[in-house]
Length: 251
Ligand SMILES: Nc1ncnc2c1ncn2[C@@H]1O[C@H](COP(=O)(O)OP(=O)(O)OP(=O)(O)O)[C@@H](O)[C@H]1O
Ligand SMILES: [Mg+2]
Image 1: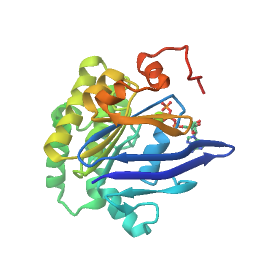
Image 2 (image 1 turned 90 degrees about the horizontal axis):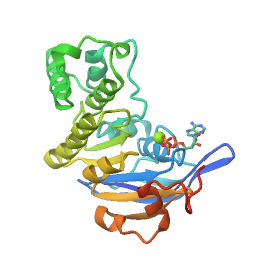
Image 3 (image 1 turned 30 degrees about the vertical axis):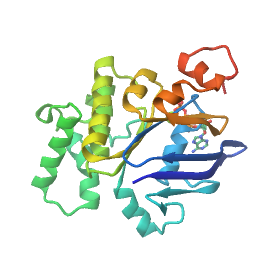
């Protein structure tokens, strides 16, 4: 199931954050979106699941416009999309079991026992021991554990598309690699289409197939990882090499 953004614009107040984004996230592949902090990457993810509306332009999921979908259809389309928010966004008043079970309770008629079984499977998949974490509350988890619980929740319904907003930020290198392997595993085993936003260039190159660079509200470069790394755009190299001096000025 692919994702297509066509001439997507998004304005917040005076500022036009996205100024005509065209991006094709190909089916069964992982597309990484690079860009400056505040450049609009999380905005792109929120637009794909239609948590916010574009100012103009249109977004298609598997060829179907999510932008024009009715509320009922939107709800059905969202079942196919797992998203991991940058903040983790767990429910503070719910424990880990209840957090991960939430989408299953909302969208399925499975029994409590079946739901619990799926929750445990997903927790194991993200490297958490169900017997240890199931009854803990978010404020009893470390930052990295919260990320993993969020990830377990985003894959609870076996979505065809997964949107990862900074899945490894704040994690140690080994945990980061574990998450990267999991992204790869979900893609290889289940043919999931993913969008990955990450400031971790090393992990991004390990996880991603296609790379896009968002700058000044547009995608200025796009290509398979190897070609992207050979880009003719000085901005891409400045970004990948993390140089403060160059064509890109901070926002
Ligand atoms: N709901 C909103 N209302 C007003 N402005 C917003 C809103 N959401 C995002 N913005 C603004 O849009 C810009 C892009 O934000 P966004 O979160 O998409 O950036 P980002 O590329 O994800 O940055 P980071 O790498 O720091 O996470 C920022 O200037 C932000 O302040
Ligand atoms: Mg962001």
